[in-house]
Length: 245
Image (cartoon, rainbow, N blue to C red):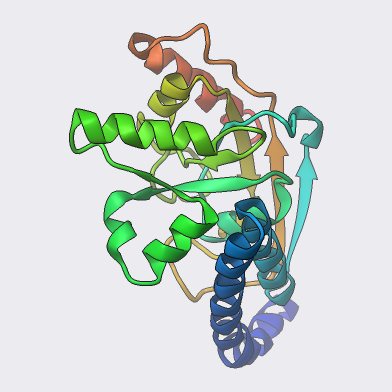
């Protein structure tokens, strides 16, 4: 009864305050991220438009985040961060609490979208183009320049959001990129975000608790492309070891 009453009382706040104010805050932090990237550097821009923005949205929701395993991160090492994917709130949890500079992989077509392409490029997100060999090599060289000195990239190996209870089949992209760039995988199990924003819904938001479990990095130097399935299985086992409801 109390949970139902709390849910009913939360709806006006969500509709009248959280969603419209969250949209305006997202626009504001997006502009600030680009501005700070241009005036200072991409690291500062990413912090403003990533970590601070995420913590503000989490505070407004509210979402409370607990982090386990921060000691497994070397802040001078770059990683291919490979979390499970439950909800859009995974982005806020990762950006706000992973504690290192992160970028996202974006389709090359997004570069042409007014505002989105310009802003993403200025804060250092990575556009990959595998349309031909020359474009693919150029994209990888650009990625190598950005992913160094502790700047990492996040790729959800499932490729889409799951139900929060079990992992979907992995795509090969994250593993191929790790092998091509020679960067370790950093497995992160995310718990609780599916209860804050369920599945692919955009508006069924509820307050709640989330947890990031940062596992030990996986060195990919002993693997080659023909052994990707073994690497995928190792990551799957690592993430599932803490994937509890």
